[in-house]
Image (cartoon, rainbow, N blue to C red):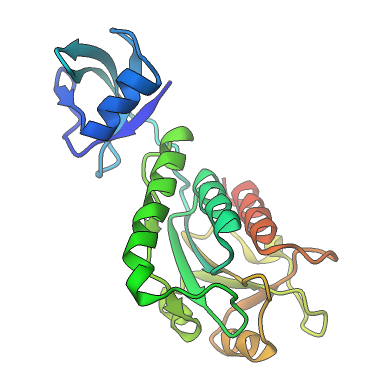
Length: 239
């Protein structure tokens, strides 16, 4: 069943119209037949099931019933992640959405290869948000992750939660096991580094600000792999 995010109030019996892009997707891409059932979600995370109808060139949906179920995680997860190369970054955004992240905070650090140039940030954010929205619709979430403009490394501490962790591979630090830290929290902040990893001074800074240093095992993981690994582990522990 296809899902779309809308700005309207979700009420049984209401009639909903779609924007130009959604109309094109329904008519020309999916070629939905009249009566096809879809799921609609609004910004208040309200959801409902609706049937598609055509009115001239326009597409409308009639809401048949409300959907009281939510597919979002109970625990708010904030992911602070170092900027990485475009193809991997797009993959990361998609998988983070599927794995239930509430907020994504990209950051630049001493070892980030990719830099967020001011003149290109707005265009990048627009494209990134579209990736998040499409992923949220695909996996039937009741919300799309909040995406923050790229920040500097030390600003990460502004996004602390009830539990705060940094994934780090250096063996000289005593890495804690995630399952020993996560005990049904209401919110978690996870920090994952870029392709070049963290400078030891950066990890020291986070530890001084009460972040737990967690291990993801003996192997060195790519940034996008480490991110999906730790989010999958959190999902298994808190859901």
